[in-house]
Length: 198
Figure (spheres, rainbow, N blue to C red):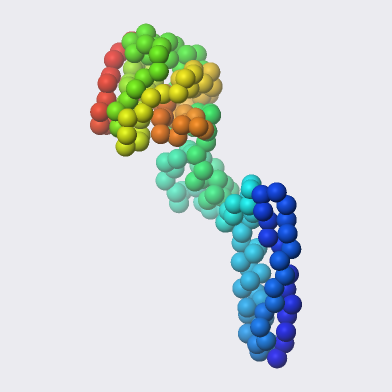
């Protein structure tokens, strides 16, 4: 029989503390198997900010995923990166055809003309959509309750450059249920839609 003393590090939000532990006495083959399993478990977990554990995965082929959240579709991007939404910048599902930052500014100004500058209060599942000049701008409440836009969030979306993207979404970090959309065409939205052309 073999006895393996093992020490591991446990990370907390402020500092790392050492908590030693040992395996019970087992046969050498079982000890090696347990040790391999424990080490593999530790190797598979990277400790993130404030001690949050994030599983690491190997890169996967982009074609094996349907990109809904982040629009990331380059080969070599890990699953963890694919699942985290992007905040405070436009994420575009179609890389071209959007008309750029000036087109966004123009349709945003049209949106404010037809819906007004003040914050909008939206019922659950409601979208306010406008289109002009071959582009659309929309604000949607994706939650199950009535919500009001936060002050200046619409302007944050306008001030962020979507690049050439043709179908884009903007999320603000402190309000994940109200989404802003911009793209080419008139935009297709289901449910409770208030659509006005500018």
